[in-house]
Image (cartoon, rainbow, N blue to C red; front, side):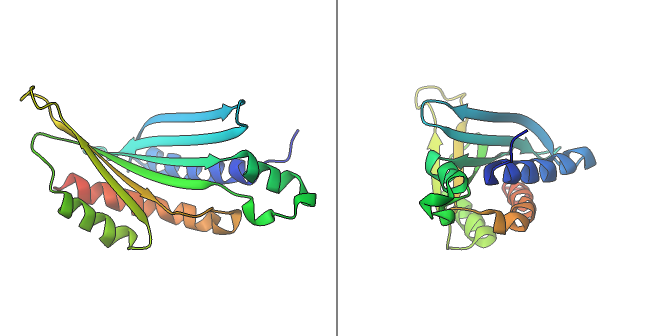
Length: 170
């Protein structure tokens, strides 16, 4: 048996919080990926979900690099402050009309505050009038998340669900 890393512990906590919401019927988990990149010795985990009556999908992603793993497993490096993972949130919308980007940005700012990094992208096929606009909204924290913020990961699920609710009523 091995000693779980910070990434493993945080993955289990966020996964547990989301599956608890799924069991209660508050969300529906639609996808899950748990990947190890042996070429770069990195890990990533993501889980996607939506509200039962919603059309917007949220994805919570955790990533850990070789540096993050080495900082935890090699105490001689004296870089314990690198032990942890990066968190990224993404919300996917499909709409018939062009989205109001200022409205979307204001929803993210209202829920997540201005200390986060946001990106909004939208795609459409200009020659196919039947195709919807596909919009992605990303929230990045711009810093490493450590095991000290484990409770924040659980609390974050409420903010993600709130974001889904606000994006669905548009």
